[in-house]
Amino acid sequence: MTNNETTTTDGQDFPDDLSPVETDLFSSVERFSLAVFGFSFTLLGTNFVLDTGGGEESFGQALPNLVPVTVAFVISIFVVALYWWEHHKLLRNFRGIDTTLIGMNFLYLVPIILIPFVSEAVGQFPENPWAWVMFGGTMAMLLVVRDAMMVYAWWRGLLIEDVPIRREFLRQSADTIVILASLPLAFVLVDATWLLWMLSWPIEQLIQRFY
Image (cartoon, rainbow, N blue to C red; front, top):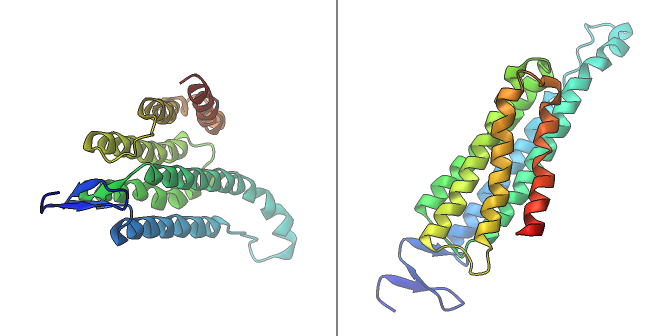
């Protein structure tokens, strides 16, 4: 082992610019990411505003206005929870991290921070396709960064040995393609945009089964 290399607990050599998963830096990246996901979860609850106009008789009339907000909330909670799990699995595939991956991880978290904002837009303007395009575009940005992180880690040799890179890349690409394809369709099928997003799940299952 040369002077510019460090060794992990499993005996693998790392250059100085890489941090194995056992280091505090890797743990800090995980903890910071978890805090961002938690912050996004918390902000989603602030989208509920019941405007009764100051009168008790209008309370019942105001409740139906919460329906689109509730739908947007449920979708957003699902999205944040799903991509928290995806992020967790992504980090578990790494045997180390470098400054480039740390920067890419920050980019991954930017859409997570934006989800409460785009969720509020969908809740207030459910019939406006641009609101759904904003939501879908935010998810697409996250997915593109996630795919780039996987490819970069593979190129840099930072993936653990048993990661099925071909299957993982196909599975992740399916998400990205479905979301990107839904953006122009939102102007035609605005009420069914979120249903189009659900297509990524059965596609993923098929890829996992046959690859």
